[in-house]
Length: 151
Ligand SMILES: [Zn+2]
Image (tube, rainbow, N blue to C red; front, side, top):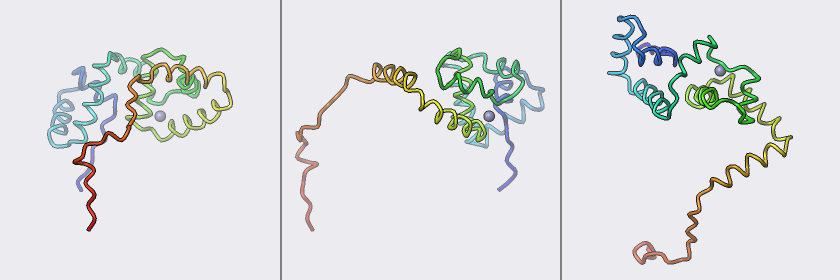
């Protein structure tokens, strides 16, 4: 159904920075107007920026490639990367959903499982963060929801 213009993350970044040639700015604006998917994509990038990640584009340009290296992915899993690079990789994996990196990432995670030390450290971190809200459901249900409807 019509040709779909694939806009790269770098392009959206450049769009937000108004760093594109005018024709391309207009093209992306037009795309945003008619393509909800594009709006969603841009919204995700904006959300990342709101979260304090402002220089993904420059990181991107510095690296001059969209895929993190094997070492970067490994460090990402270990959680030893700079927050910005980690966000970039997280974005690349989850939002961009790069298939190659995801496959590599899964492989690496598989490998990490053989290092229980690292894993328990991470677990501890997450357990520490787990919410203290524990509402046990002790059958104090409202009568409205417990109307036996046997027909
Ligand atoms: Zn990739």
